[in-house]
Structure formats: C-alpha cells, structure tokens
Image 1 (tube, each protein chain N blue to C red):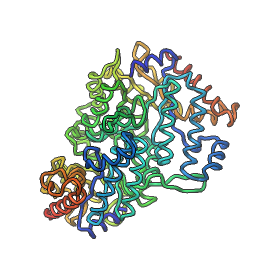
Image 2: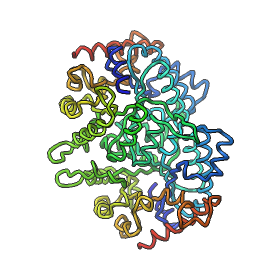
Image 3: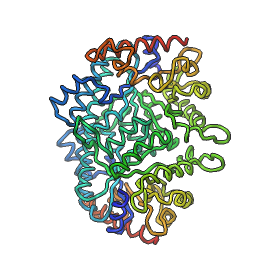
Image 4: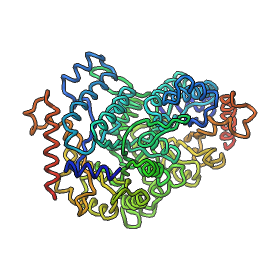
Length: 305
Length: 305
C-alpha cells in the first residue's frame, strides 16, 4: 500500500494529504439551510450538510492530491447518520482515485484490535462470504496498549496490503505529558518509534514499510531524531497550518530521497474560504478556495526541497 | 453518574458489569441460521444475529446487574449494520434500567476528543436543537495524547453528569511495554493514575469522582498501589475469568468501604453455554446459562469481603 501512496505522491508532486474533518461551523450557510429545510434540526441534517460540503470540496481537489484523511470523530459525533456519511465519503474518495487514511486512532487488546483492523482495513467473514465493513486503505493506531494491541493491524496490513500510522508524537500542546517522559534517559516516544521500526520490518512494501508513524509538525527537532530512528517508515505529519507548523519546520521529516513524509492540513484547506487570504472567493465558492489553498500548500511544501 | 452506579451496585449487591462483546462464533447456530436465511451472508446478517443474541442475554440478566459494557469494536467491525446494533443495544439496556459503559477507548487532540465526548456521552447542537448521537452513560478513554485529549471528556462528565474510565493499566500481556516503563523510578501508569486523580478532583459526585480508571485484574499488586493513588476513582477491572483473573486477586482493587471497583466479565458470561460447567443448559438455552454464570460470578466476587 505504501508503494501506491508513494507513486501517487510522485505523480501529483504533492507530499500532501487533506484532512476531511468537517465541523458544522465550517459549512457555508446555504448548505446548512438547505439541509435543515430537508431534514429539520436532526442528526440527518448534519449528515446531509457534511456530505454536500465534502463532495463539493473533493470534486475540486481530488486531481491535485494523492490522499485524504477523514477524521472519524467528526462523523461519529452525529451518530448513525454521521457514520453513513463517513462511509459514503470514504467510498467517494476511492472512486476518485484517492488513497483514504482513516484517522481512527483505535487501539485495544488483541482480539478487539483485530475487530477494528478487520472492520476498517481488512475484511470480515459471514459464513463463506468475505466482506469489507468500512473501506479505508490505511488507518491511524494508538499504541498505548503495546504490541498485542498493535500487531493485529500489522497482520492485516501484511495480509491485505494495507497501511497504518502509529501515534508516536502527536501535535497537541499536552502531547508531552506522557509521550515525552524519560525512560532510561530517553523519551517514551522514542521507545514507541523503535517498536514501529520492529513492527514495520515485517511489513515492507518496496523501500518503505506499510507501518508508518504520526509525528506532529510542531516538533521539528523530534522529527529529525524520529526520522533517523524509523528510516523505513512513512511519517504522517499533522499540525501544518492551523496548528502552527510551517514548511521550514517540515524538512527534517523527509528522507534525502525527498520521500518519507506526508503532510496533513485539515481546516487550512476545507475551511480556506474563511481565511483573509481567500475571502475573494466568497462563501458560495468555498470549494474553489479549498482548491487554491491546496495549490498554495503544495507549492509551500515543495519549496523546502 | 458514579453515585447512580454505586446505588445500583448496592441495590443488586453486585460490583459486576457484563461485557457485551459478541463474536459471531459465540452465537448459537439457530440464531446464525435464521439471520443468514433472512439476510443471506451480508453485514446485515451479522447485525441481526448479534441483536437477537444480545437481546436474549440482556432479558435474562438485567435484573441481576447494575451495568453492561458493550465493546464498540465488536459492532464497528460489521460496518453500518453493526453500528445500528450497537446503538440499539445501548438503548435497550437503558430501557431495562442498566447503566451503559461504552468501551470505546477513544482519545485524540482537543477538538476531536470533544467530538467523541459529545457524540458518546454528551450532545450535539443542530441549530437550536440539542441532540444525543449515541446514548452511553459512561465511556472508556485512552490517555496517550495527554490532558488536552482527556479533558473534553471530563468537561462533558461534569456538565452532563456522565462518567468515564481512563486506561491506566490494561489487562493484556504486552500492556507493560509502554505502561510499565519507569519514569524517575516509577512506572508510567502511576503518572497516568496521578493525572486521573487530578482530572477527577474537578468532577466529584458524592464520595467518588465521575472520572474512574481501567486497571486489569491480572495485576493485583499494581491494583493495590493504584487503589491508594486514586482514592476517589472507581476502578473498572477487566480480565476476570477468561483472561485469567480470579476473585482472590480482586480484593486490592476495592476500598475498605467495599466500594471503589466494578469487575467486568465478557466471554465468561455471554458465552457461558460453551463452558463445561454450563453445558447442561444446552445451546438453545444459552441465555439461561449466562444468567447462571452471572449468579456464580456475583457470589464469587462477594466471597472476598
């Protein structure tokens, strides 16, 4: 799977992933109004509004980027109608040729992690029929429960050629509270990184492994260190743009081959029309503002090479 | 919320929660056959079979216990039909007067954790209408992202009188890989426990806090230590029965008032009919076997006092 992602990154010349993390207050008024008219103030209205919003943005940006990363929480919070739209969004993006990274951050004990892995990137058996439940190509995984919680995802990645990114060092302000604690003089996230290397060695796909890592853009020195610790792992880098990461901070996340990292922006792209810089597009043309924001982001990221 | 749970534990004299973690190979053949007949080999058949199975068990055990703990992964793995049954199961248990602990182990950065918290134990706003998405009373939370990932759940617990259990020390074999790492001579899980105490102090409901902790039954010495470190937190204890924990190992998890812990069993109850001990019930009477297993478990747990 990682070789497919790399191929698309090279074709589009864009080590960039767009986070489809819709919040209702990002969505233009005309879409919200129409959803409320059709469904009143129900969870179904949220689902419809998010779907219209996502679809318009995907249609305008799919040709520019290799991948999208829907954040499942933004759908799950609207219950079943939200989950329906998560599923629809994943399928729609795949039809458009995009690789879909489900930002699910799941992780549990063995048999339960197996269920999550099968459900999101693998398949389940119903009698003699093998079926997919959700349709992501790759997912994010929380490592706090240790190897037996992570390995079921690794197994599915190996068997089905799918991908995963293990949370190593997240981009949020209090990520250091546990992740940075020193164990024998080294931060915990380095121990996690070594495990990522170990898990990933068993799951190579070309020069890189299907087991990658999440390392926030907001910590470039840690990024440099982690880059060396996990030479074969792709790094998914959140925190660019809205969370404060800039392109100069991103160089250390890449290997010398110009590969090895993919940078995420969510709000900076999908809610671009509200930024000063893109106000000229107007609320009606929100998706065109997103397109311009993607073009600008790709140029900015590529400027570091 | 924790005061309501304690009240029910005392009424039923049962510091016990049943994990509704259905696997298809737990489900009796007559239920699977009927689901396949109706829905063929589809995800819908999985949903229907799980629903019939859950409902029969709940009907036989709801009067004996204070709470249930559905493991969302076991539903999520069957996609949308699975999520429909998760929702139906939660609502059905609440109608039966049970407190529902959603075993969701979610955790993310701030705004995303807010979405999970609102979706599972809080509410979302659609225009001027406040709605629930999923209907759990309490949830489990993964702390790896630190305070700003956990606090949105704490806020909802305080504002809406709901409850949560933070993963401190899990019951699986490799839980020690990160959780037991020594930080200044103390295991990481103790740091997490101190944070649980801090988060929970802001969220008291009677003598206990709405912020509890998950500590596996398989580590009684750690249980004793953690009991003292978090005097106001209820401890949700997985790992009894099928995972190897015995009642003698459980005493340290309780305070001297006989409160402070609630012990989970999943497979040991819902799949009791397959155990040697309960074979006499037969597959058709699987739910009666579950009832007997609950009675036996309550007696076993209460024997430690």
